[in-house]
Amino acid sequence: MENRKLTVSSSPHIHTRMSTSSIMWSVTVALLPAALWGVYVFGLRALLVIAVSIVSSVAIEYGLLKISKDGSVLDGSAFLTGLLIGMNLPADVAIVVPILASAFAIFVVKWTFGGLGSNWMNPALAGRVFVFFSFTGLMNTYRMPRTLVSAGVDASSSATILTQIKMTVSEQTALLASSTGVLESSGYPYTGFAHNVSQFFSSMSLNVSEYTIDAFFGNIAGCIGEVSAFFLILGGIYLLYKKIITWHIPVSMIGSFALFAWVFGGLRNGLGLFQGDFVLQIFSGGFILASLFMATDMVTSPVTRKGMILYGILIGFFTFLLRYFGSLPESSSLAILLVNIFVPTIDRYIMPKRFGEVEKKSNKKEVKA
Amino acid sequence: MASGKINILSRGLLKENPVFILMLGLCPTLGVTTQVINALGMGAGVIFVLVFSNIFVSLLKDIIPGSVRIPSYIVIIAAFVTIVEMMMHAFAPSIYSSLGIFLPLIVVNCIILGRAEAFANKNSIVDSFLDAIGMGVGFTLALLLIALIREVFGSGTITLFAMGSFDGVIEIPILYTYPVRVLTLAAGALLLMGYLKGFFEWYSKRKRG
Image 1 (tube, rainbow over the protein chains, first blue to last red):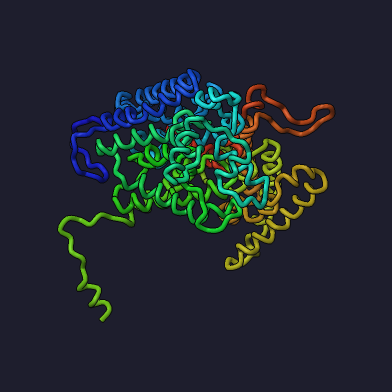
Image 2 (cartoon, each protein chain N blue to C red):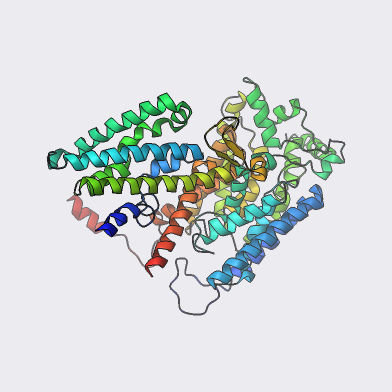
């Protein structure tokens, strides 16, 4: 990647001082708070999962770089892929799973298509989806976070908020209750902290459920790195400040998901239109992690601003569809992988206007006449 | 002359393997290779149909007018496929049900039609017979290879015929409890096919030098 020869590369051509490695390490830094929070609430076992996936990713990348004699493992891309894979796994997963996920991500998704920059699919996401579909049972046991355990909840494995809602909804046909109501009626736990904050909001006549607050701060069951929306958003703001990502993809993705979830989300629970509980849905599951760190992957997202917005809207729509009406979890991962397929098409049809180009109106008139 | 005959027979195995080199008959290849027994059943069916259709096309090549040759081939092939289907239904009902739609679809399998058009149409009966055997066995071996990998890693078993006290399923210790399920899905089939194609491409390039 760092060779100084004259090479003709694909767009964009604008030059900055940023190199591949500085971008990769900045993203890693931005992910660290959320990862550390995951290790804090799920215990040292989570650290082991992250460490194993990073080490195996880097080792496989190193081996493949030795064979291809091109590039260096120090560019941090394999480290970042490994970190993302680790953050996307439950803390109690068998140790062979992060190794297999890393192997699939690096070998199959990244290097089969020619290494860094040539893959059309996000490697970390593909690795996660691969192990998810292969080892469904192993991937579906989540540990309760430390903060809920100290509030007196059984520490053994539990359903995530999303699977709990999905299960309850599928068991009862006519519910007539919002997602929060569904969770309350099934006795899903929340922390005292969330209760206090919710009380505070309701004193200001704002209705924010305890579950939304727990999901925002990361006191929910889930994968290691995806639980704390708060720390992920902090990392996202850092990336925006460093100009590594732009606002287009996250905002359009979250916006379109929120819109669809608000308008049609209530239908699943037997409510009418415009009744969806979209705030809880945004902060639960892997949606924030996906929108800030997965969808914005430079290799697999469109290059133009308009293309990015279209890409984000499509991901938001498919996430909504899969999450509300699909039978599988992992909706945001699957949505991103699905839309990754369209990225070359988006890039082909949404071209930036060339500098100094004037639209040829006169030609069109001639044809019409 | 003898080496020519051996060449006709053997080229279907590797040099012109219908699945990995000619890329023919991919629909059944990806569809039925979830179990070894399915691959064997499919391979047997295709060999039978291919041998007889090649022989009959070669026999009738001077009688069939050029303009209606494709429909005529289809009629010949369909006749033998019907025989295979009825035989399997009668004698191997479990394979019949697991092959499902792919069994009648042998009629439009492009290996059989392709060999009729490209080879049996122009060559003698003996050569056509040898070509059919080579291509059919090549197809079966390719199916077996894919099915073996997919079944061993994807479900941790090897399914064969049930004989006596043996129920026909070999279980592989660790993989049986933690199979890599993706390989039994369509995505796994395409992925594996891609890698095998890549391997054979690399192998044949290296052999040519």
